[in-house]
Amino acid sequence: MTAAAGNTNGGARTWPELLALAFGAVYLLVGVVGFFITGVDDFFAHDTGEQLLFFEINGMHNVVHILIGVAGLVLARTLAGARTYGWLLAVGYGAAFVYGLIAIGQTWDFLSLNAADNVLHIATAAVGLLIALGPVRTGVGDHSTRV
Image (cartoon, rainbow, N blue to C red; front, side):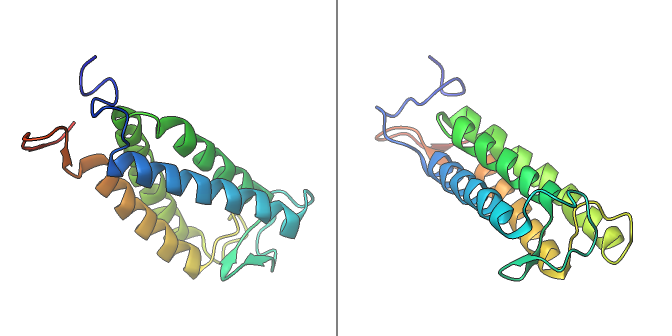
């Protein structure tokens, strides 16, 4: 099996795999808890006034968090999968940040975003880049490599 295809370090998880697993678990938990706050009505409502900590949420926002969380849990099994998840976070949350810059306060904002969401989205995109591009030591005596 090649380094790009799977975990080659004797079963121990690499830090990108662990970070992808952690982010997946957190986003899945946030999505599930979000439904306890929003319920399932007004799924695409704008400006719901319902928040999880400082972050505005609605039903659709919760579904996105659940999907991102499940993707993290599934893709964290291999280094290549974790790298793919990193790109998913970087591109997806980078786009969510740009969307938020335009959509906050607009009636067509189907994710019900606020400024705190934008800060979280750009930070998550940065973590995604770290997962996707950060060096990993693949074995004893090996130089750090990007896989």
